[in-house]
Image (cartoon, rainbow, N blue to C red; front, side):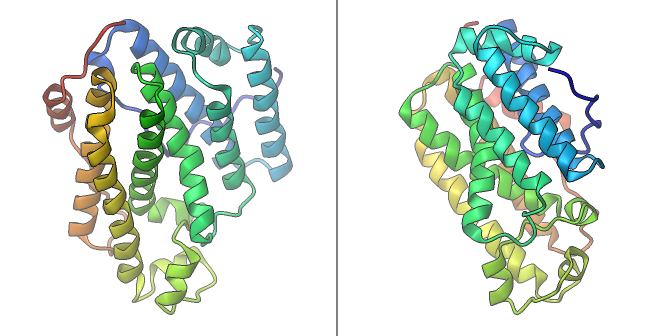
Length: 278
C-alpha cells in the first residue's frame, strides 16, 4: 500500500495497556501491534491534511486489511499484525470498525453528536479494540464480546471527559447534543461550550453514564476466561479510577488532567495477576 507517512499521533484515544510487560511474548507482541495500528489510524484522523486526503488514507487501510487477510501484507505495520491475526483468529470486521470510527473523526461529524452517534463512535474506536484485546488474551466468546462493548463505551467516555480541552483545540466536542440542550447550552463552538456555566452539569451527566457502564462491565467480568479477565480487570479499574478523579477534580481547569502513576498501574497489574500462557 502506498501512502504518505502518517502524522505522529497527537494523543491516545483508546489506550491498550494490559500490563504488557507481564504478558507472555506472543500476547505482548500482538497487543503492541494492535496499539500501533490504532495510533496509525488516529494519526491520520487527527492530522492537518485535507479531508479528501484523510479519506484516501483510511480507504487505503481498508484495502490493506483485504490484503492482510489474504496473507499479503504490504506494510511493516500490517506485517506485524499478520501473526496475531492468525494466532488469535482476530476478526477483520473489528479492525475495520476502528477505521470507521476514525472516519467519523476525519469527517468532522463529532461536534456535539447525538447520543446515538456518540455511542456508535465509542463502539468503533474502543469497543472494537476491547474485543480484539480480549481475543488476544484468549477469550473470543460471546460474553467477552458483550463485555468488550460495555467496557469500551465506559472507557471512551472517560477519555472524552479527560480530553475536553485537547479535543476543543482540534475543533471537536464529543459531549452529547441532547445533554447540552437539556443544560440550555446552544453555543456554536467547543471553546464556548467549555466556558459555559452549565458545563459541569453536562460532564456530570456523561460521567454518570460512564460509571453505570463500568458497573455493568464489573458484573460481567466473572463470565470471562481467567487470562482475559485478568487484563480486563486492570483496564476496568484503571479507567474507573481515572473517572473518579476527573469527577472529584470538577469540570474547570480542564488543562489539569489527572492520571494514574506508573507504580499504581503496576500495582493494579500485579493485583489482577496479568500473566498466562503464550
